Length: 224
Ligand SMILES: N[C@@H](CCC(=O)N[C@@H](CS)C(=O)NCC(=O)O)C(=O)O
Image (tube, rainbow, N blue to C red):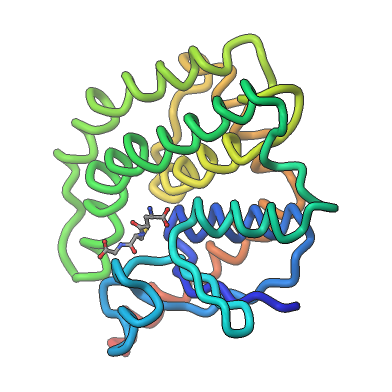
């Protein structure tokens, strides 16, 4: 069955769900919704008015973690991204939570919004906020993540999991902002980022995001 994901290409939570589905080779279609200017009836499908939202036939589900858990349970034959070993499972869900809360908050308020949301609103980049985030607020979070992957290729066990996809999905907005962390300071974390980035599904999605950014900027310039 084809799944429709309502979301935005630059939303890290949408990115997580799309990557998760692509890695599972699920048939999904992204339908663009801007959560800051949502359609009138959006609360009917997303009670918190957030993206992503999954629509599969008459089944609707909000929240990236819930959607990934659903995909995983609905397709047991392809369920490799959520570890089964109890400690790996616990750690994967913890790293996902850390990325979804602490990392999201800092990247969103400290970097992404001061650059891109300002740009969309015709405002100058808030470089002071970006600099403070990159120099002071992000490093402790990145240092923690580095400590969790140090000496390893993947966050949990010896394979790609939802933990890697969750961290990547947040950090991809640092790449769009040209603020990726220094690989000498966070060697294992940045190698993990590169490892996920180079997966065919991530390359495909990144190219689509760059195109989306280009088109959005062209529309802004054209005043449409
Ligand atoms: N816990 C949610 C968070 C989703 C979320 O915060 N999405 C943002 C976009 S990245 C959003 O829709 N924000 C709109 C708002 O907060 O009004 C998830 O994992 O899906």
